[in-house]
Length: 371
Image 1: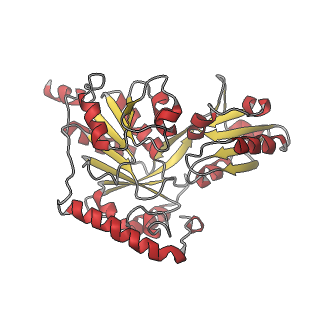
Image 2: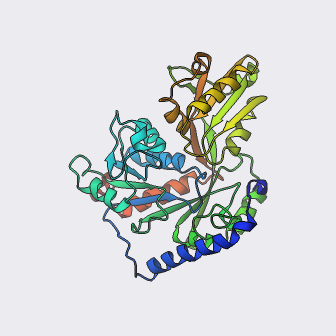
Image 3: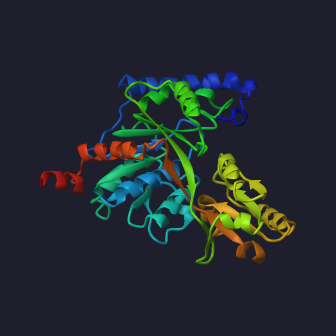
């Protein structure tokens, strides 16, 4: 854990108490049944958090798509944060990123066989997925960032917490970054500590486990980031991360994600010279930002290239004004997650067992009945 990344604004604590009273009352009304949650006769897995961004939801959703996509007709339902438009929208091959949001656009293009839809009203979105003719064969739904959307009661809740900013060491908005108090972790059946250092020691695992204080019914897993070779943004070219060191390349890292710290640290294992331009999460790149990128890159010594995230690439593809040298040397860093401590099989079985026991005409159920 890196406590230097946890900044609490003590002068905002009174506002946090008011915010906590509001969110606490809402949760109490759901817990007591005065506000109703809906359940569905289909496996619904929620991947979410109780913090404002930065826990790595998208690569974890993508992990589940890889795990289940070969067996089931999968759908992902997202809010579509910062998209243009309202209501339900099913992603097509040519749906522009501005109508979906960067993360749903990214998932649709990486997993074209999956249904990807956006709707801030998750109940309405699930209804469309289940009953619209074009998606009515869906067999399992992944809810992206819906832990606070309590009108839907997911069958399996997976809660993510960043290793560098554990929920138990944070506080409520606006003084901290929690959407609700840490006690609400109790609604999750699975907790994943994300963005862990690959070399985390056994003592480090134990310290985190003790800090979280989980309930007996909750399963705890740890994940770390794994990077694929760099992919050129506008052409079919890949290069290994080792080439950054071998060729002594100067890197400009451009990110618009909530917590770029771990990615920066990981890249420094490959590149000696890294300059960073960190923008806010889901940042919409404007002319001034593009000029800053162009100017910063032009001032760097050769050899050099620009690295950005998959999420930022979805937005940068549509911007204008990047200088030719930037476009020619702009690479995307694909990221996946890896379950640590030799628990990959246990995690996969947890997911598969849930889907197996709660099928909606799933191939898993058909296979079981055929025995």
